[in-house]
Image (cartoon, rainbow, N blue to C red):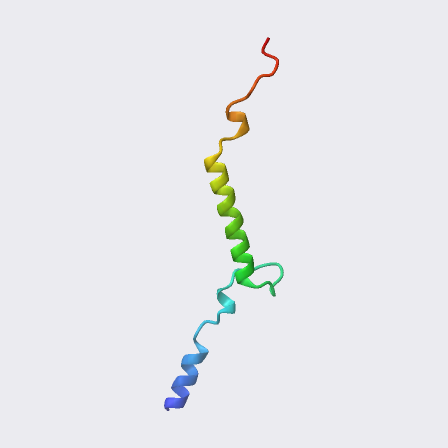
Length: 64
């Protein structure tokens, strides 16, 4: 009875593959895709937050 209980407990555990995000390429490793997208989004957010948009202070070259 103990053996059947252990086997049934193992069969109900969710697999790590089921918890991954779904990509068009199902063989894409999660750690590389997640780290790349996180690094790009954090760098872009920090850059845009620290530096204002160029159109915030437009320079008029022909203001004669």
